[in-house]
Image (cartoon, rainbow, N blue to C red; front, top):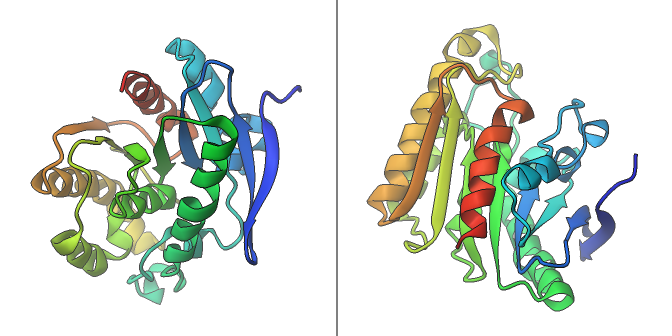
Length: 252
């Protein structure tokens, strides 16, 4: 299979990640996506299901947008989660997270300046799912003026509810940006114990509304919320809301 992207390895001190870059000639803006190995092709994806981002661009006839996929590693939960898990061991979840600031600085200081210098993009969006959705949320609160849109899909605030409740008390966001929140009604990660698994689908839905309400209360005006009742927790479910995000971002 011929890949339609190029690969670069970009580092900040000892922090290095593989970056997959799809930048058509007409692109004047770019969307940064987490879990980059899952963005383009099924063959590359961790569970052999990708976002099929290029198909999504084609389906919406979007030609002015580049896609930048930043691969995750075995430190994914530490990179993406701003706060340590609050769930106890009886729910089958280990204590991880709480080091997202290093990843955020990497995006601010390495990724965006590199793309600016090489491609001269006018501005950026950011899109992530699950823990990647939480990373996008946390980055949104940094209010980098180069980033104008945020897609936060299937964001499990419930893994550290106290920390996020405190976060929303003080966090502010670009009120002129575009935000899309998505959740499925049948989501399950398969990574929690049976006691929490019985509640997990409802927790995802509830957190979608909590996030939407927090953004609206902060003054965000351009905000979409989509809840798909039968959707599960994987890239196939995220494909449709991704198309919508791509289209609206292309029109900013």
